[in-house]
Image (tube, rainbow, N blue to C red; front, side):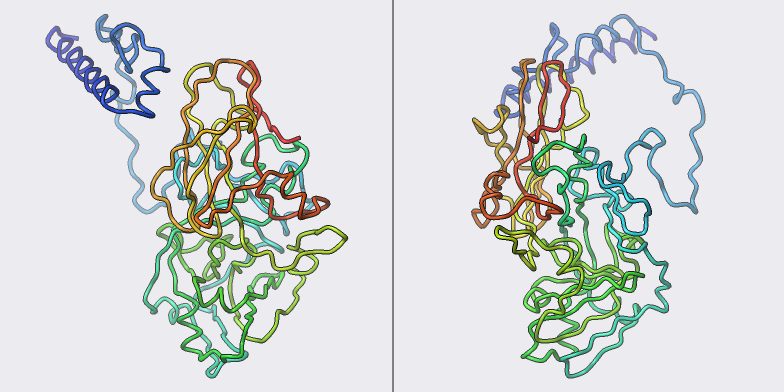
Length: 440
């Protein structure tokens, strides 16, 4: 390196250092915390002593990527992640392993999704008898029953309606069902991976029902899919007229086959299984149909041997994703990060505890904070190196506070195949920095 180049590099380092130090000195909260907790060597500041030393000693090797031609862009291909991110993928449950894959699910690696939008290739999915391969040119949606004018709509008909685009989370009612009382799953992908969030594009169901002329006496609708299981659910008409969507695109592209291509129902904030994929039929009536998916499945055990039907809403919930099970942390500054969400509205606040819930401190919410959408939170933690238990709790816009499992046990029976686990979920941190499931 020539002398004038070396001087320019040193000037850049020193200039950056001054900017960062100025930023830290005029702000509070997170940046002032960083100033006090991140180890700084001499005058190197946030850049670190080694970076400054390298510049001063002329040790800044030119990487191979600077010496060779880059890869050519493949213009007629679908872009894929870097090969170095090949470990970031959906996975099956380690606990409930089926002998076949026709009724199964795959889980989102939420520890590796830094934003609120889940990439389409990582979006969790649940199927009851495999997923179909449907030609959109031949797919039709029928709207019938208690309507004045039954409709038969093609996909071309549906996409001609004015579009609506919204951000919403989707969560399986079985998310967390393996870890109610004892620690079974090792990672947050296994405990909470039946959770994703997307930008959805489609048509409000209310528009379609208005065109069909819904009978004022109708109180329930049935939504049925075109998959081999014929999965269907009974839906109260109030929800369908409120915010339900017929969606055909997510995150800027058409739905993928496993997520309902070419058309699915989306019921924001409600358990995922009612957002019927491969939607082929909507029928209006005066009472629920009592399908297998709402009697033998997707119901909650209650005290006294009874079962709760139609527990549609996914109530307020949060979980720490970093650090979480399977990770290793170092003493000093650690940013605790996670997700919070509510099927009843926005997230108003998230608290974090590092001593198992004895003491709580307010976490910072990252914008945007949207109704029925994932919200990111973060909390600055200076870990001293001893055993700790980290846990989060959230409050939504209705004032509902995320409960403990003990709170839930007071009103529900935690036994068997239990859905709707929205209890607090702790992670244990050992003295060597290993993070493990803290349930039980």
